[in-house]
Length: 422
Image: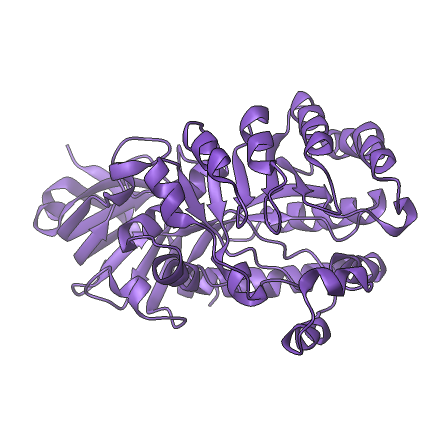
């Protein structure tokens, strides 16, 4: 019996399906891409309904009226990228701080001088909702053109109830019609705001007692995050905060062990966090601990490049058996880059990933880090029809061509973005 389809792509040179077992991929499973050569793929109403050899498409697929069939001419198709860590809800840029860093200042030196996150907070509090929306749209559009079809969007540049709600309302409103799948993270614990300077415990109490309940009541966030770092929030504060958020029904994640080993990865595992992110300074003890857990180790190699820091220990995490994802960490201060293809290149060239492991980290494991692995990150029957059409005849070219992605088109929910934006 034929399946109905409103999109049929044929003559695919390499269809990277990422089939395999559902859920996290680690060890040898992270190297398996499950490629079908000379392939075809069909979707209906935004979901994949069939994959197989191109020669079998005509007897397996029935195209409905006004459907689209596209001959891919021997090129590569992969799942759309899942960028599971971004900060695009802000106002103003920080290129002046970038120049200071180029002249020798360190990220922490800039922050202590009034720059860094609090610089963006000052500007974001003054920005209108329209300005926030324009900035968010600009960067999501670039991400989409670079193949990101599912994206996590963090708040965290307001640090007060009014601005944080305004930021999350902006993301929530956009998610209703924007092609990408947008998941929202409340990052009110991104930094200690000026009005709570020297009173971090009181700020955590304020977030738990007043802000989190309001965010939950308005259904403005899927996740809650905290920056567990020296000079910001301690492991003990992070554990308390995440447990409170979890008890309210939020998914939880954590910025962990970025500049110092603060035991953030251990907090993530003990709290049942979906992901522990950054991990530039993770200890060997916590590498072993996260490898035994279901918490995804999310690496952000673009931030290490941007800040001139040592790259995260990707190979050690992979060899230990951790489930590893990669993401951009797009933000105005420490990684002004929306490109997942560049992150794949850095993961391979600087973090010890194989090309196959980097593709897994940017698709299946990125989806797992956001709790959407049941319908994102792979091209198999029943999954969302989010795909990248590459102007390549070999998937290894994705990592090989540094900074310039060879993307011909992107499909989101079964629709070509070239058609969506006409």
